[in-house]
Amino acid sequence: MRVAQVMAGAPIGGAESFYARLVAALANYPQLDQMAFTRTSPQRESILTQAGVPVSTFCFGGPLQFLNNRQYVKALEEWHADIVVTYMNRATKLTPAGNYKLVARLGHYYNLKYYRHCDYWIGITKGICAHLIKGGMSAERVVQIPNFVDETIADPLPRSSFETPDSTAILLALGRLHVNKAFDVLLKALPAIPNSVVWLAGDGPEKESLTELCEELKITDRVRFLGWRTDVNSLMKTADILVCPSRHEGLGSIVPEAWFNGCPLLATDSQGPGELIKDGETGLLTPVDNVDALADGINQLLGDSQAAQALAQTAYNHYQDNYSQENICARYLEFFSSVN
Image (cartoon, rainbow, N blue to C red; front, side, top):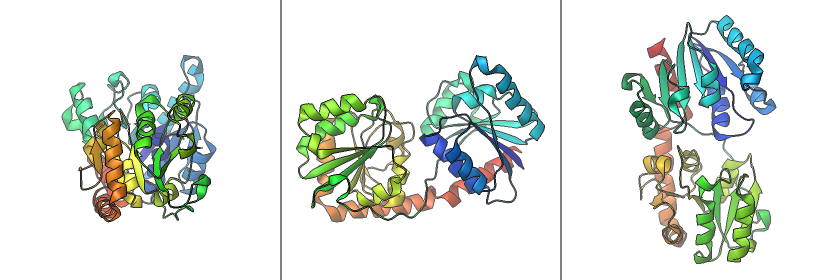
């Protein structure tokens, strides 16, 4: 099967990272002949070419990039794909129906006006699949296939990293510093969580307001703003708890990342984490925007390390049974065969 994989996203991002990870993993299966159509990104191109996947780059711009967008469509037509998989709004909008099966993969609750011309739709959670069906897509052509994570085995960092005091619990939070991620709720909970620091990995528009909040709460010495990191697995191997306090979270990719790395997990009951996590078995769930409940849940895990590690072990087993790279690649291959 000839499969065109189309990503018009930014150089850095969760969907962009998974795109490169999935396409590279599928390159191990000889029944697939893949071509990557993507925006220029040295890191992404390196991952794909090292995996043996040819890459064709385009601007994937707005209306003023009409000529370049036409060049993309022409190159796609000339490659004679059996299946074209598009990721997110821009790539899907710019890819017309053609002599191939057009499959859109959605990792969030996107505006469906960009997706109606597709033949099939992949949602990475049950909630996103329900969103597609409720929006008018044929239920028979909607399939759920979740993500797998970067399965590189990593070593933990020294616990003293980032000037972290000895014998201090490390609470890890990561993601774009955006209001939807609700890192402000975690910071407000921190005064009620003794002998702990927050490692906050990420960047975004809320950084200034979060920094100011630390000053207001007098917790500046207990929070480390790490910026964007490429060593997520090492961070998770080091932390005592991963905290996902989101108000809105389409998937919550960090949930299976925590499971794979054996990091005890506490998340709010937002869309993705609420679907993925079985409370008390593969993680703990607390209500969205509830500072006291978040603090209580964190203190519960820190106060019983044996229970926290049992939770992490159950979650690791759950990941291997349901979300591993081998498992997810097999599901993509089965899906491709069914629509080709």
